[in-house]
Length: 125
Length: 106
Image (cartoon, rainbow over all chains, first blue to last red):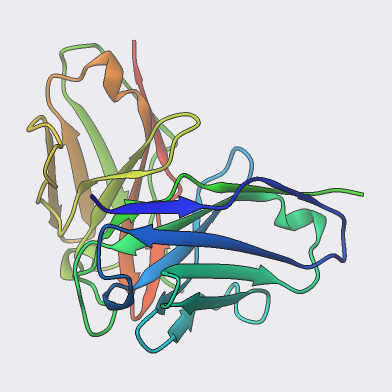
């Protein structure tokens, strides 16, 4: 059974750094692209970016390029989303999501087939 | 950047058909995906590549896509189908989500 287990809720102050995780199990972690999605309180889904753990090829949404860092460690089957300096506007639920199928590059044929349970990040002074 | 537009809300009587639209420029030339999100839960894929259902998704969920509009149809809507529904497409290597539609079974 495919599972994506995300790290627990975080409460941080503005300016602090943070790294949240998404551990995959039940499949070949290195072979499937994993993306990150933000959902601000009461709002819709926003695409942040995607990584291929096999070679760490990473594609960022233009809206999040330079704002966050996405990485992966295939030895521990874990993907990460990282901030160097949090802002109050980063308060949101963050989901990781795996593509449904193995693909060489993400394309119009790719569905977000499996989702983690979400990590709540709260940034407040 | 590419945009997908959904109505904020759709109301349907239990047992009736709910239709949720998603519009975008030449959307019919792209594959569309639909996700269901219930309060406090993660999104769940209910339709992929316009009209395919993942295993475990009830047959009452169906999808279509043509021209500038994709449609998610829930036939015989049940109270358990009350949720937010998001359409999604790809614009080059970036995912684009619609704003979401809240389906209420009155």
